Image 1 (cartoon, one colour):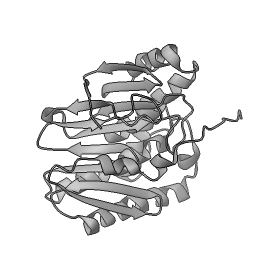
Image 2 (image 1 turned 30 degrees about the horizontal axis):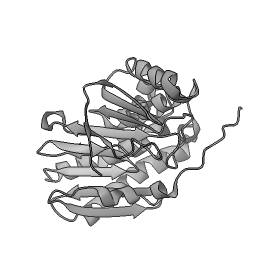
Image 3 (image 1 turned 120 degrees about the vertical axis):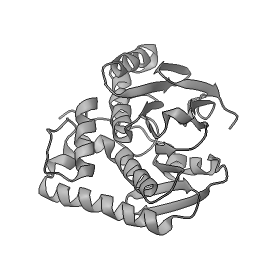
Image 4 (image 1 turned 30 degrees about the vertical axis):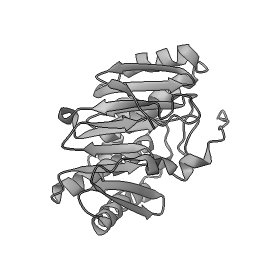
Length: 258
């Protein structure tokens, strides 16, 4: 197997300092961490216990399945459908096949959506669940999500404006230069919008890898945007690589003042 040299990534992401920049808009902030799962939630009230219960449900489904099928955790390639798998695992398997990556590429987005939908089912009307930069979003008004792109001069300078009609929505970002997740690409950020948060997460990983296959730059950005057209179910994609940026789909970019 060919070894992959990983870039050193800024510690600010690992400490999740970007969470300090999130506008609460009158909502209450809750943070829950259980082992590797570290979520930030905005809702009308403190939801510590509810979120904890939902995370434990997620982890139970995943951990039980991985014990039986270790390949699920290790594969970088799509795996076949398993109708006997728990719902959360089936969502990850489907997202991996749609995006052309292993199912674990969708884990953060899947957990965010599972918790978000769980809170909505319990009566919450407005919820944002952020899991390492992967977001499940349901608001009653238009809102803006700024893009964190590491050391790129465009980081926090560009945002995606999300219309009320687009929600609930998954907004997921993958990076070859920021964060702890595995990426074989060179992009500072690839942000994907989709109605399925697991798909948005898996697609962000796939498209980030596409940038690196041609050593970044204009060709890498163009290749990622072209590949996005081949993944069914995506609403929009934004790619940032250094000072370069490109976008496709139903995505409205705005300048932010962070």
